Amino acid sequence: MRDKLKFLLIILISLVFQVTLFSRLPAADFGPDLLLVISFSAGFLQGSKEGLLVGFTAGFLQDVLLGGNLGLYAIARMLTGGGASLLRGKVYQENFPLVTLLLLVFTFFHEVLIFLLSEQVIFRVNFFQTISYHFIPTSIYTMLVGILLYLFLYQISAGGEKADGKTGE
Image 1 (tube, rainbow, N blue to C red):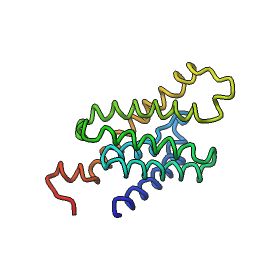
Image 2: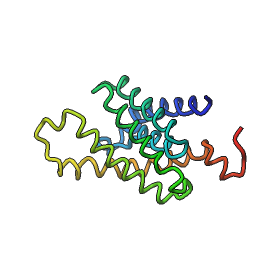
Image 3: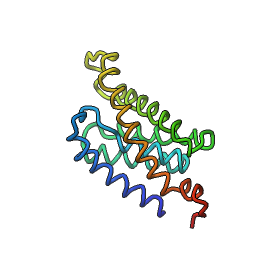
Image 4: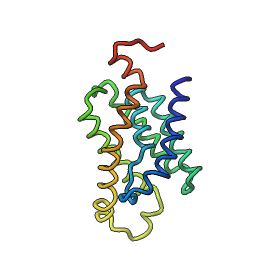
């Protein structure tokens, strides 16, 4: 229960940062997706149940609070948390260069999924131009900022406690 409250608080704080601070930066058109990193980290560090729950919660809050297609981000983030949980136990959580690369890949596929599920597909949008001007910059930016958030989440999760030699209480 405590972990769920921690993740909810982190989701809310990240949502505020994402909407305020990161939307004002020069690269705001393709800012980092902190909620995606949280969904990925929950699944990767805590397992499928937490990954699905945190992903759905983060996406649902984004859908409700920021408007748009209700359920679009909830589904996409839930899939991200669930997908990341499939790698749990197969990839060392402490292998930060590989986790960084995984964040890049998950962000790219998340952006493609959002694009395909949204009404943007109906409009005549050049998919390859969207990849080069939106998907790739967003993925890189999320990867660079996201690894810092992942390190924080790693430290407060059971993985960080095990790395320090402490047992969870």
